[in-house]
Image 1 (cartoon, rainbow, N blue to C red):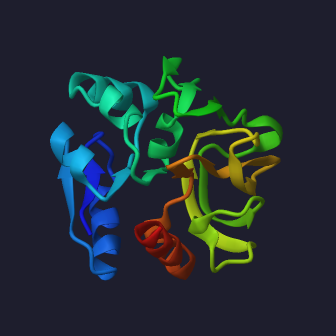
Image 2: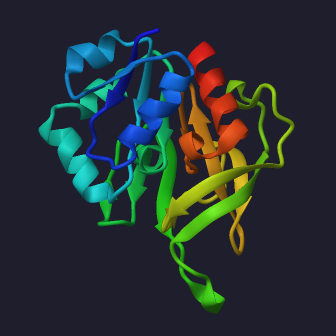
Length: 196
C-alpha cells in the first residue's frame, strides 16, 4: 500500500504516521506532485490555519494536483476543511472539492472555543469509512472552525448545535476529528480508508 501524506505544514504528521505504522503502512510525507499522483491513498493532514496551509499548497504547486486525484483522499481536521470551497479563517478560498463553507464557532452562551476533547460522532449517511460502526462512537476533536451540516455530511457532532464531523463527495472524504487520537474508533476508520 503506497500512502502519501501531503505536506501542508500541519502539526499532526507524526501521530498520523505512527497510527498508520500500527496498521502496517509506512506513509511518506511529501510535496512531490508525482509521488502524490502515484499513491494508492492520499491523506491531507493539518493542524493550523487555513490561509497559511492553502498558501503552502499553492506555493508547492499542489492545488490542481489535489483537485485532479481519482484515488481515495482523506482530509483530517484542517485537511478536511481545506477540501471545502471557502474558509472564514483568513477568508480564504480552499480546494473546492466539496461544496461547503467553513465557519468559526461563535462562542455564544459561553461556548468554549476551541472545541477540544472527546465528543460523540453520529453517522448520518452510509459510507465505507464507517462500514463496521453503527454510529454513536467517540472521537477526539481540537478545532475552532467547523463545517455546518449539509448535503455532503456523513457524520455529525454536537457542540451547542450540530456540525459536520465527516463530509464526503466521490473519492474525497474528510473528518474533523483526529482518527489517530481516537482509540479503536479512529483506528477502525483508518483501516477502512486503507482498504476502501
